[in-house]
View 1 (cartoon, rainbow, N blue to C red):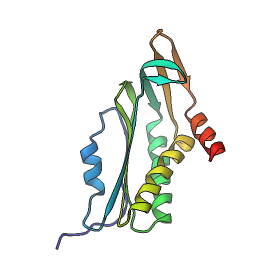
View 2 (tube, rainbow, N blue to C red):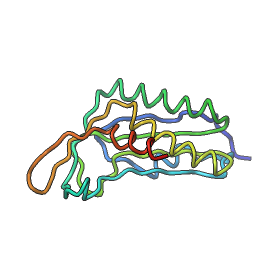
View 3 (cartoon, helix red, strand yellow):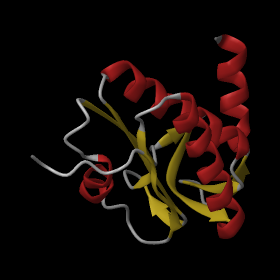
View 4 (cartoon, rainbow, N blue to C red):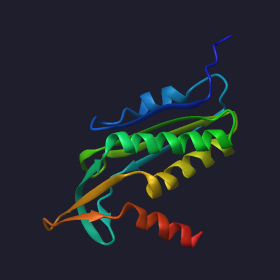
Length: 156
């Protein structure tokens, strides 16, 4: 029989290195889980009708990781048996690059799916990570990451 490791928060990282998606998935994999939900946030080519060439993400890393860990722990505390790993990239990213990976694993699919969504929605509201979009016309603009999350909350 395979060894079962403890559930909970397995990795929190804010880093300049590209995200290793297979590595994030491996962290939450375990014989006890029957479902893994993976959320990948990527840099898109269009935002609010403006063509985008890339994004610079900035963060105060210790505070961002502390808040990510708090969010992950809150979600794990609310759902026994949940396993979570979160990585957020900072620095310059191009269209198509992965900016955030959230893996949530549980014995059942609903808790895994719900956890991934809760983490990304809460991350957008609480974690001190800022983004500056680069547009095709050469302009650069800081974007409020909480605006979309607040708008979604009003629509739900």
